[in-house]
Amino acid sequence: MSADALLTIEGLKKHFPVRGRLFNRSNDSVKAVDGVSLSVRKGETLGLVGESGCGKSTLGRCLLRLEEPTGGRIVFDGQDLLTLDKPAMRRLRRDMQIIFQDPYSSLNPRKAVGAIIGDAFRVHGLHKGAGRRRKVEELLSLVGLRPEHYDRFPHEFSGGQRQRIGIARALALDPKFIVADEAVSALDVSIQAQILNLLVSLQRRLGLTYIFISHNLGVVRHVSDRVGVMYLGRIVELAPTAALFARPAHPYTEALLSAVPRPSVGTASKRIILAGDPPSPLRPPSGCAFHPRCPHRQDICMRETPPLKDLAPDRAAACHFPLTLAAATPAATH
Amino acid sequence: MVPARVRPSRQVWMRFRRKKTALFGLAGAALFVAVAVFAPLLAPYGTMDMGPSFQPPGAEHILGTDSLGSDVLSNMILGTRTSLIVGLCAVLTSNAIGLTVGAIAGYFGGRTDNILMRVTEMFQILPQFFLAIIVVALFGSSIWNIVFVIGILTWPVTARLLRAEFLSLRKREFVDAARALGMSDFDLIVREILPNALPPIIVNASLQISGAILLEASLSFLGLGDPEAMSWGIMLHNAQEYFNRAWWMAAFPGLALFTTTLALNLTGDGLNDALNPRLRT
Image (cartoon, rainbow over the protein chains, first blue to last red):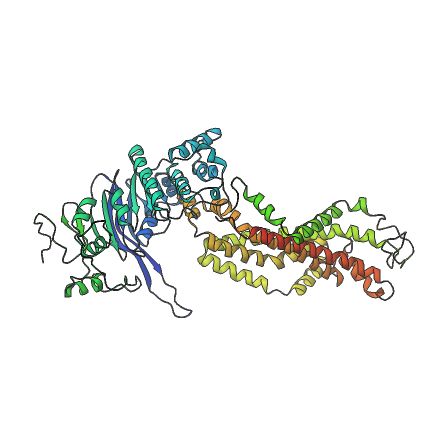
């Protein structure tokens, strides 16, 4: 893994056990995240896309140990997160934060804004006394709210304003790394743009590293430096944003991109319609999990799971027959 | 929608006072507390002031006198205090246990939850009077033993209510957000989840008070009450034999019990309506 990585994940797994009936213990589990390895570089935004249920949010929550991973390693800033005890993990939480999808359920309705944000300082014993209020007011200004909002309650704000409060809370401890989990999906389109621009400008000013989780390709394209595409708990393609959108290597990525409506007249781009629903993560298909829906499948796809392998510098896909990349990269050696 | 700049607590009051029965109940409950607090000042006679027995209600003894010749009204006023003490202390005991168990079970879930809920069920199946009789027989009939019995009998309801609230609230994103800030389990339970879980607990507590008062009266009526403390139940107990001769001995304490319970239940009902359209927007 590269030396400038802030966060490195190796073989991360999160399986949710499925409870059997009484006397009929079931050993089944939903493999929400099933062996994800990737690294996030300092200062970059890594986008994570995929359909609902592909495990992208679970992955994000595992990174912060809001969900306890079943296996694998998470190395953040040189420390193996999964070996930390509770107090050490609590200290480390200052460096990694999360912005949630739903601005309505992510703020405690019984606490005023000042307490919601100020709790970050209280927990870590920072900025005691009057300095705390000043610090919270600074944060409110930073995210485009007014210091007078300090004493108000969440129900007095609009969705976009609430999301700003959530962002201020995430920024309070001066983190290095933020997981934005569908951070704009619940907002109106016009508000989405404001929040996205706020996130981008904060990244520049504060040198933040983001993992940006979304099902919205347009949004991911706008903010990400690199994009990881997830399907059924695994990364199927990982590439720089421009390259991925120009030439997808995995058939699933290709199908996703073809589904994005493009405002062009005349040139009706050919749309790849995927047959069927995403398979159940309870019983994923044999071999490549995508094979039942893949237009290019061969026999080997049903037998062997393709590993995520490098196709070119900085490009990787998990496919036995990746779509040929530009400039005659000898992609498939089959 | 809710006007801006109104604190949540004030919104609850605004909704509460819209309902006449709730206000009536609250007034009744306030009167009950006031009488209990100022009982010795309000009672026209002391418990030891004996006059002629079985005086019907009249000018001298507004609600008559009992078999020993003491004033029914005075006894009722002094009995209010016992009712209030038993009601409040029993509910405090019950909630101290119930909230602790419910919060731990609901927050940690899994095996902890399973064990605690089985223990809770064991307490729920205890036959009320049987337990009461045993405790009184073993430890004597002081009002503190009665408070203890009522607390032991009623905490499972509180525990289950709070557990249910915790189970749904602990999955909310604001809890995860606080955890991501580094908050400890204790802080998450007490500062984040509990305040949001309280509305049904408050409603339940107001109903529990009237339940506790009734239970104390029932125990006293059966002769298991504290003979040192004047209470409505004991008055009813004493009235049993003389019901044909002196109806007032039973009627007025019974009426007091009825109106107090009604007032407390109406208050609880009003609180339920005022707290339940949750401040979730």
